[in-house]
Length: 518
Image 1 (cartoon, rainbow, N blue to C red):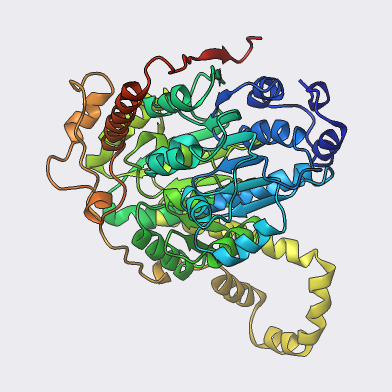
Image 2 (cartoon, helix red, strand yellow):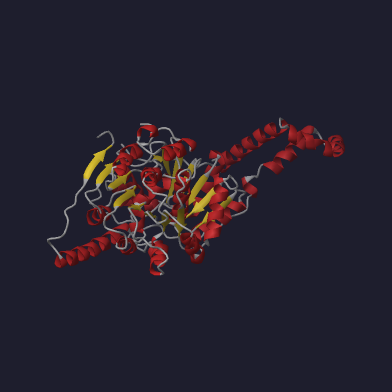
């Protein structure tokens, strides 16, 4: 279906055309008409399918620019996603004159308050900063007509459930609610029942949960061999833009330092960086100033960067759903991509869990040798020399060295000079600086079932001792613990609600629409 068939207003249509969009993606095709009718919608689709436009276009369509009040609120899990959503909504709403503001932690709250005072029709923000602004009475939600929960599953994973409920309680009950998520755990469904009115569940089904445009590989490798294995593959693959995922902030810092030592243009982002540095790194990555972005899961969540050809999972994620989000950074907008996951022998059970969730087996990949990496680098260097000799702007500089070149040609043979040039251009693996990446304990695997089928591989390789690194360092708990907590919290809330007024509780449910149903 084309966007021109979606009954959007002329100024929104014009913005869509200017952005170069013609045909709606499946999630957009099914959710936009429902949202335009004013219905509550739960949209479920994998990353990179255009969920921002799916909720953004109908929301912008009904904004009244004559009223200088906040009419729509978007809650996002991370600063990066809030900024990106704000930019995209501004682009679509600019012709109509819609004012879109983003608010998030790590940046001056005074400046954000000043921006809100200057006027806003749509506010996009992270839960913590939104609550701060509400408590300071700088954010007034009395006129909000549309509430959007973006990347809802990640907000739950990050422990924002109480914050989200506190924010929703400040939004008028007579509103439209749009909830978008890549996955649909029970906790998300409970939000739909609790805070939405007869929501229609639009689910875009695929044979695999992950993008069919992404080729998925794994490399079984010992922990201390991961870095050399990864950089050799990078030399062979020659990715245009790539993201490397590390489990911890320390890991990201060490990987970034090591990649720079090996001559790669790399920068890292994680939660300890100030917001200006994070945004600068992302901007440089988008503008091809750096080739490799090293990131933790939270820092890279929601990044919408076109042209990422490779995702390298230096550490396999403990939560299989995080894997889906990671590799969703590539293979976007119909383009192809590759993901390579490095797995230590006693983490193989997590590989089975991922394959079970995605319903797609990863292909085993043989590590590249040092000689293969060297030959690949040499091939690239030779192509660059050939390309440079055809570049008139580069050849124009040759004249400056003509006298020296004649003298060198008298002292050395052409072969010797060519050998010298190549030795300077191509770094020999034998002379590369050693890189030490601190060892971290592999994730302990405890199978939940009887170890049959694919899970048997994990059962054989499980590690019975130790604690996972995230919990040891005070980071995120595993998904099961979080989900159990949400179940308890919601049971308590539901019990309180039923004691207060059982008869007034409204009945809600789901209407599920899959792609192809009308």
